[in-house]
Length: 366
Image 1 (tube, rainbow, N blue to C red):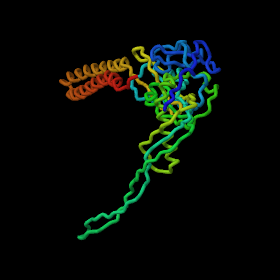
Image 2 (image 1 turned 90 degrees about the vertical axis):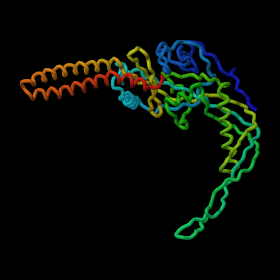
Image 3 (image 1 turned 180 degrees about the vertical axis):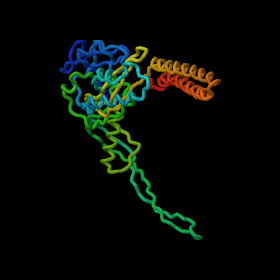
């Protein structure tokens, strides 16, 4: 039997009010509709998630207790700079704003949340448990003109029903706290959660905290499945079996406690030729970089026109050499060579002008 967590434990923090005895204030983004806790000095800056609107003061819904655990940053600024440089290197024609110095100037320390859920399970379980056993048989094969018998040992599983009682408290079951949690992980890559540390308010000094948009009552179905999986592992261990299937629980969940685990993230941003802001994310633990790398079509067109101009000049020069060939035959041959050079420059002009457009089409949706 489920006990859905009550949202009445949450508190509303007003704008310009500090949260959890820190210097962080609630703010929000009008574009992506996400809420944050930010230092007062960062109000008015671009949203670290979408980079499409400024952070503005707004009320926020918080758990009364501060986060319980935090994953430390293991990527220092020098390493982040190297990761960003490698990330933008494949772009031939970069917008002026897409350079490492500007990206590092805008580097922001962000933590995004997961729920840590505690609960006591009291009730019964049932499942089928499997025991390995071996079956001997023989296999006949025709070799060297005669039949040969070979013994074969096959491992099979014998399934038996089991039922039992469970009263167990599970702590720090990790559950998503954001609606787009999986999308976040696709961008940042996975985190090693077992190296988390107890939270200290000094850890988030000057940082931006992304607040949960999935409240406990909405996150509970996912958390419940995690509790079932944890209980199944315990019951399998208690039954001393290698295999378990068709596991189900009939339990009450009591004494629930919801806190947060904070995951480290760097964000930065740049502006493309059209004035559009693009965020870039860097996993603070692994250094994986994600973002849209827009090429500059203006730069491509500029160098395409330069190459086109060079092609025309070379072609005109080739015509002069060809005309000179009437009185100096070797000049005609040289003129033919310069025709090929002008054709190559013309092809290069087309490639330079079209490459940014083709590259930008290959970029993921931001």
